[in-house]
Length: 328
Image (cartoon, rainbow, N blue to C red; front, side, top):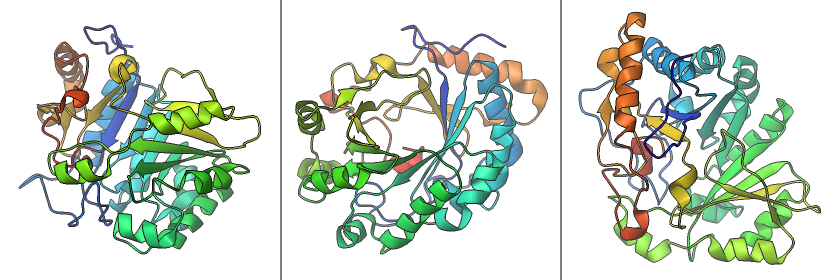
C-alpha cells in the first residue's frame, strides 16, 4: 500500500465521497428548487475506467469506504457496473450510496448483488404532502416502497437522511421516533447548510440540531463510539428502540476535528471540503493505469492545503453553489 492519505492536522482519510453525476430528478427546496441545470459546461462525467482509477488510487492509500453520490447517482445507466467495479477493488470494505430512493424499489436487489453494502435514502418528511412540498415530487409512497425493498434485499440497516427545516418538518420528531422504534433505521437529522444559492432559504429555515440532541439525552439516548470510516454524524441509541438517531451538526464547534473524508466530483475534481474554495483537477491523470503514482502524489500534495475547518460558523460558504454540485 502507498502512504496513507493524511493532512497537516494528522487527520487520515479512510472515506471517499465519489460523485458520478450532478443530475437529479427531484427539486428539493434546499438544493435544486428550480430543478437541475447543467453546471459543468462542455464537460462529460467521469467514465467507468476513469472512476476505477480514482478508486484504485484511494484504495491504495488506505481508503476503505466509498460513498457513491450525485445528484441522483442511479440516473447513470452504468450505475450497477460502477457498484461492481468499486466492490472489486482490494481494500474497499464498504460501498455505500446516497439516493432519493426513486429507483430503489425496482433495483435494491440488483444493487445488493453487485456489491452495495450500505444505503442512505433521503426522506425529509413522513407526511406525503410535506414530502411533496420539500422535494418537489409526489413520490413519498414510491420511496417508502423502496425502503421496504432494501430490507427485503438483505440490507440489515438503512440510513434515512432528513434535512431539518424550521417551520416545515421541524415538528416531526415525535413521528420519526415512533417510526424507528421497531425498525432497523438510522435516522439522520442534517442541519440545513448555507450554500451560495440558498442564503435567504437558510435564514428562514435553519434550525440547530442541538435542541434535538438535548431532547435525546434527556430521554435516555446514549451516544455511540465512532468507527474509523464513519461519517460526521453523532449517533445515539436507546435500549427501547431498534432504530438509531444520527445528528449532523456542521455549525457545532470542532465539527471538522474528526474529518476523515475527501470528495471527487463527477467531472474529476478533488475537493478537500464540501465548502472549499476550489477544486483540484485530477482528470488528466486518469487516462491510463500508469499514471497512478503521479495521481497519488497530486492528491497527497494538495492535502497540505486542507484547512482545519470549513468556517461555516463564520458565514463562509466557499464555492459550492448547491449540494448537488459536488455530491453533498
